[in-house]
Length: 281
Image (tube, rainbow, N blue to C red; front, side, top):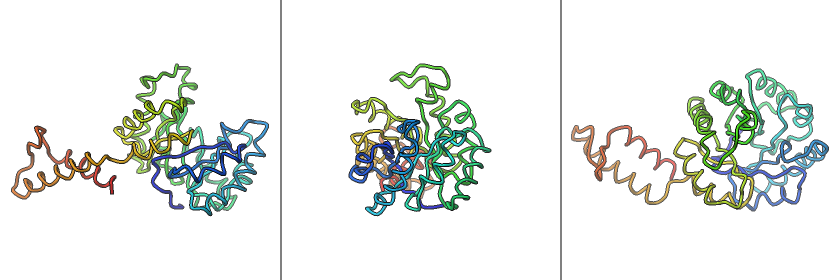
């Protein structure tokens, strides 16, 4: 599959707004999405996919990692999106509302038929069935990353969306766990109130704590917060290095657990410290 960059931030823009799409490269996101799905109304799908095919190569030529979000595989627009909306400029294709291995096999076949044998899928897990089966879906050979879509998930559940995220806590954790077991990065839910950067920052912190690698962004103002939120701070890195120095010195003396700044440290905490340093590097 084509190489996909580290995804701390994945910034969306509507395919029917070429003025927004053309400026995606200025926003600093790790990758961008030209969105032919939710952000493109039903009566403008053809216009959206034409814009995606035309503008993706322009963005890619400027050094931007570009993806296109097609409509979900069972919809009437999916086949035309693949045939007419994709290009060789893409690093991946975003497929929303993934729910079954059969659906992913159909996506795989459609991409191959259109000449995109090496184009990986960023799979959207945003329905009850998709989340429930997320472990096997993210392990599909065409999938290179995934994301959790809280808004669609709660709509499918018939629940109520709240700022606390209590109603999506289990599903959010399930997708993070599935990504870890499948060995693919997963991105966290959107924050629809794009002016509330405090909430966005807090969600970045909780998502990183769960094991997410990045966050979906629907506004340019969220990008820098996501990029910072999924990288350890200088203080975290310094503490991790000090912890490892102390732990490794003790290990060399045959001591398996140490007291570090009042905390009992053994191999699991040392592994966490190595992860912090690896993320920073």
